[in-house]
Image 1 (cartoon, helix red, strand yellow):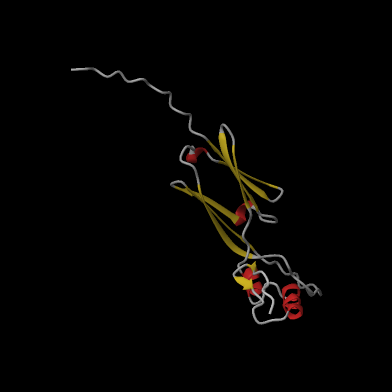
Image 2: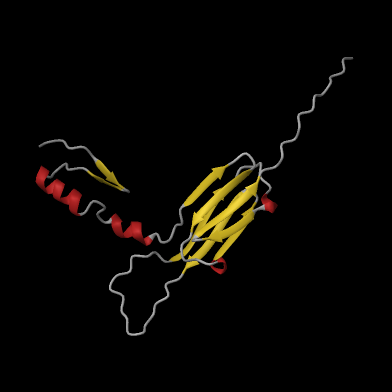
Length: 152
């Protein structure tokens, strides 16, 4: 028996311990995710997040294609940014029947821990071309003050 390397896809590791090379390769290329494929796609809509820090601001962007302002809720709780939304499946029944639907639908929640040096109450939010942008201005640094020590 030949020892082949372990290949991991998600939670499932493919290790051909009791298989011959041909059957192992067939399984790797025809069913690489195994039973986890359904689990991967059932997790639902999870919008990708990008974080950017500039000298004066901290910027969070989320890709939320086809969502409108009314579909999204943004809250800041302490230093936690919580973005919730829902993409609903709008099915048209006018004599049409879907043959395949690969778009993801459903509710989502993204929670992001923000840095402490931001003005949370001054956040600006915009939604343009399916991208939600949240801009948090940074707190102005306090100037350093020299403290004189008196000797007794």
